[in-house]
Amino acid sequence: DQQVKQNSPSLSVQEGRISILNCDYTNSMFDYFLWYKKYPAEGPTFLISISSIKDKNEDGRFTVFLNKSAKHLSLHIVPSQPGDSAVYFCAASDRNAGNMLTFGGGTRLMVKP
Amino acid sequence: DGGITQSPKYLFRKEGQNVTLSCEQNLNHDAMYWYRQDPGQGLRLIYYSQIVNDFQKGDIAEGYSVSREKKESFPLTVTSAQKNPTAFYLCASSMDRGSYEQYFGPGTRLTVT
Image (cartoon, rainbow over all chains, first blue to last red; front, top):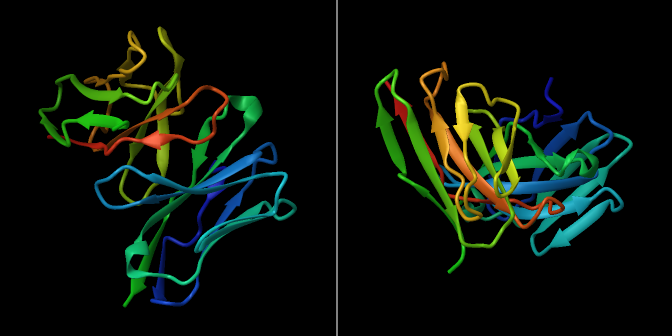
């Protein structure tokens, strides 16, 4: 049973436009959420995170939105750049379960010049 | 220059052989993790260690073993009992058991034929 799901395996966006990556979760105990970016044959790198006490966190071109009632979070990238092309993983954590991360299956973002 | 190193980048083994993947960090992090990534899938937790000389099974520990004799090192052995060992293996660390953010190494691609 997948507790964190990224239902879109891929997304294609034109350079300069907004990219919206979505993530759904089922475990209501998750209290912290993270987004990681991964290039082929490399390890994931941390991008941005959000605590369950917030509904928005912004860092430059990246904004994460959290809707707890819908158990849904999204990552917005504005404006999208070709260098943003990568696989994006969302991850969720439950402080009471030792802060282990549960990852979604990833979404491959392609930003076309 | 702090970080996590994994070696080698690519590893080839014959079926039936045990193989050990190296993971070293100089971030002075207490916690370390091993994940496996299969094509088109997210990261799945194999083993984790929150302190030296202690480690716990993750979601898919069968066929794997680990040791944590030093804070900076967390080697993973893929045994012949692992039915589908070919995968991309990622090592990560976090500051301590209370930290959410994990930092990843570059990964090792293991191919078993």
